[in-house]
Image 1 (spheres, helix red, strand yellow):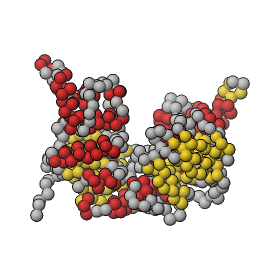
Image 2 (cartoon, helix red, strand yellow):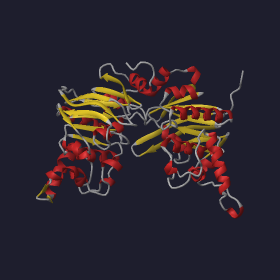
Image 3 (cartoon, one colour):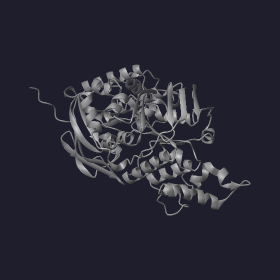
Image 4 (cartoon, one colour):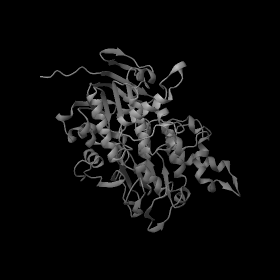
Length: 502
């Protein structure tokens, strides 16, 4: 009988909270030398928070971290890196104007005489690391001249430039081609053979069962299962991921669904999505579900005129509509509430009333002059319907909570009197009370005859609010489900490409 090696790093009873959110609640995790542990869970399960605790970006409020048998504390990202913890993130910060070699060794460049950078050693070291990562990239090339996949390989090489004991890979294949993914698998196998302890985070079950030795499942900030990959299967992992009640956060109203309002046929983009087609009916909440990289937001942005499709057609109330810009989309009755409300939805620095009335200036001005009283009247009408919590409509929208910012963005578009409203991750990053308010208002919109497209990565939200669900994977529609009989397992299996979608 083989005695298992002691863990390289152990986290025990780790808790971390943010205002209104308990991101981690007493979670535990052990990573073993020469083994890959898959961390599995829905979006929002606490995986990213745990990675930030491991890499010293966040300090836990409770719990203990033990490295090589010794209790330790990572007071900063630099301290974690110095202790041998390195991470390859899905979105790693790199520097466009620096060379590949400079990006790889930034912060720990090889030094020669008098403490000066040894450029030849840096270029040679970068070349070796890139070869180990399976990337044929000239280390002298400026990063800005590389494709996205090549940038990702540079990020991997940067993580390998530190002699790490623990390597964290957070959705490492999201931007890679099939050939590059195969090369990444080979890299993981080499790291495992070198005795590295590897944490592998992925939504893709084929990757998990190809790469991992162990698994840990998070749900709602708690660790709900762990074990050996060879002793589990896809069904068991899905049940652990989604085993929760929908509860009262989703006050679904019964609405009579009317005739088609929006019909999309063959919508395609050269790199983001292909052959998207569906109907959206009056009073319907149509859910779009998918995992990271499924192409849902990219499609919605094209539908709103932010990007241009390569082909396809749409009809609104049976009439062909050509949308080449957001202003044309708004004029035709389609509005879009983006996922990144701080960057794309609200105008930070402007007061609430101006944010709400910005797309409706034609209604609040006369003879080219804005009517302040009319702006306040319009803003008050729509923010009161959403139960906005603010000191006054003069308040800078940047001072509001995430939930109230979201309400301002929704109010802004409702004031244009649309036919179709697209809500992209409508409750992302907001507290449970604000989620319930947004869901209740979503139901009211449908009851008033508005057609709603809800893009969400939260399975309970999809199950609780959608009348019908479209599942996307790798830029294509892979399943369509009516509300009746729909389960979390069906959604996850379709989104992850496990067996039959139906």
